[in-house]
Each structure stands twice: as C-alpha cells, then as structure tokens.
Image 1: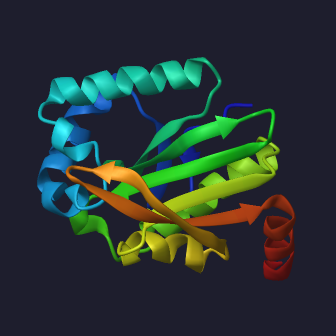
Image 2: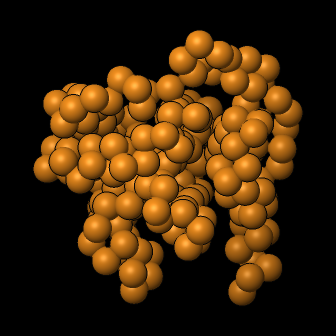
Length: 188
C-alpha cells in the first residue's frame, strides 16, 4: 500500500517531496537560514531554488530506488519542515532519520508528531528493527525529539559531521522495534 500522503491529525500531514515543493522549501530555508546553518552543513550550499530543485531530484531518485524517502511536513497544507531517511539499510533492517523545521514553526510539537508517524511507518509497515537519530551535542531542540520519544542515547560520535569550518560531535540515539512495540502497548 502507499504510505504517503500520511495524515497525522487534523492539522499535520506528511507528503513525499516533489519538484513543485522547491519554492516553498527554499523560502523556508531562507527564512530560517541563521538558525539552521548552526547545525546543518547543507544550508550554506542552498542559495537558490535551483539548488533546492537539485536536492528534490536526488530525493526522488532515492525513493524510486526504494532506498528511503523524504517528506514535507505540512500544517494545514503549508510546508513547515522536512523529515526523512538519511539512510535505509534493508539487509540490516535499519534506518536513520533526519529532520529540520522552519524556525517560526518550532515549539508546537510538529516534529515530535511527525517523528512518531515516521517511526510507525518504519516499524509497522517497513519492518525496520533499528532506527537511529543523530543530533549535534549542543542542539538541544533537535535532541529533545528522540529523548521525548524514548530513544536510548548510545554515545557521542566525536567530530563526525563537518559544518563549515568546524567538526560537530553528534549524540547517537537509537530505538529498537521491540522497544517501540512495548511503548505502543503501554499507551493502549
């Protein structure tokens, strides 16, 4: 069955990224550039709608090759961020989630709900065993998501991501299918 579009609740939905999303995504990046560039190495290279279109073409190839997906996070239809898979390893049944949200849309629980929906897809539909999220040590907002969702902190990947002229230490979080199932069981 088709996984997307995915309606999360009355205001929030996820749709696969399409080329027609280039302008709203680039506008969102531009508006949130100073906040995003602290943590995300690709932000400075995103200088025009053409750069965003190139990213979206790459994302569509990823999906076509059945190697994961990238989704627009939409609030009442408006793009407010992106969530998707950095990596999807079918042979090891594992995935790595990445996400970002426009600055003016943080603090409303959108990313937590979007992550929870992606986890449901990964664990229940795609039979993933392990999901990982990495976030810069000092990026408390991004780290709050896996912590809120019950991920385990495995450690620090020292200087594992280059962002401009510095290397960032990333906190490695993981959640296993059996942990997800027990959490879902607790909630019912």
